[in-house]
Image (cartoon, rainbow, N blue to C red; front, side, top):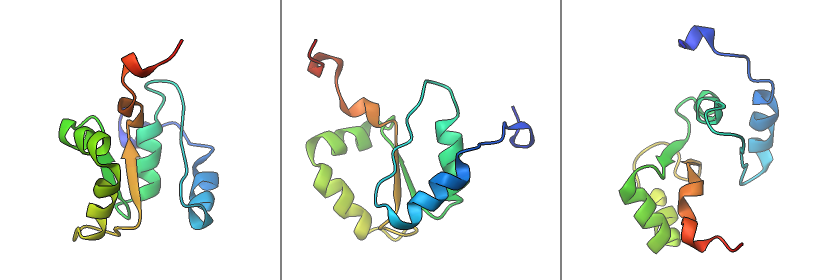
Amino acid sequence: MTLLSLYPRLTKSRIAEALLDTPVVLIAGSRQSGKTTLVCQIAEHKFRYLTLDNQLILLSAREDPVGLIRSLLWDALPPAHQAIYDEIAGLVRASEYQI
């Protein structure tokens, strides 16, 4: 699917509005439903993008989450106070689920 043939995202404006006064916005949904595409459209290179699919970032998030967030403050990339954390479900190991 090319960028021109993407389905319109009806929640795009609501998420953008929430980001104006809300420190954390969670976008949840089923697999392969376009969450990452939506977030990248909204961010338009104004946010730092970190995916927990990256094993080094995942390890950092598990071992020192505060340090990971603080490291953004010292990074020269676009605004340190705004970041996208993608694939956060990877933080929870299957063995940690209690049934």
